[in-house]
Amino acid sequence: MKWFIYLGTALLLSGCTFQARQVEEAGPRSTATAQVGIVNHTGKYIYSASVDGAGGANMARWGAGGAEICCASIPRVWYPGMMVLVRWDMPEEHTHIIKEKMVEVEKYDEPGDIYMHFFPNDEVRVVVSNAGGGSKTHPIRHHGKPKDPNS
Image (cartoon, rainbow, N blue to C red):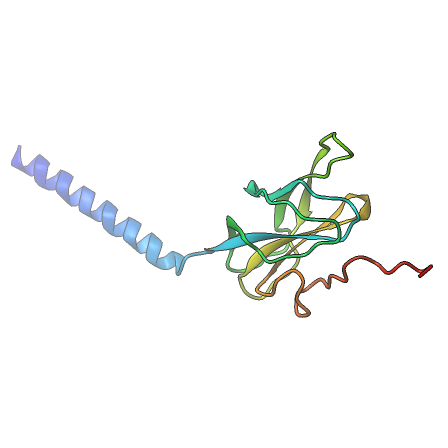
């Protein structure tokens, strides 16, 4: 009976060693925590928006802000074909209009915050950046409300 206990213990320990080796070989954490931000390039109010279920904030017409909604998870290293589900509510008067779209995440060199950019005709772009949505160093420039050509 003792031999069965010894054998069982040896098997358990070898399993733990194997699991530890797998974690070691995987290297540092492969994902990073990110805040979620919205940049609105349209004249319509965004009631709420999320990326892969994270987010939920709103944004004024032509508005841009920092990533202040917690929390999403992103890969530390960008890879081609990286897709996220963007869901947003852009109401028409008193009616909520909820839309969703799979969007490819644009290439990034380092982890940062996730920004959803909304454009007319339901065009959506998603970028990862350490610069706020209204910053001059943000990957997609936000110019605010277009100037009226008649003024």
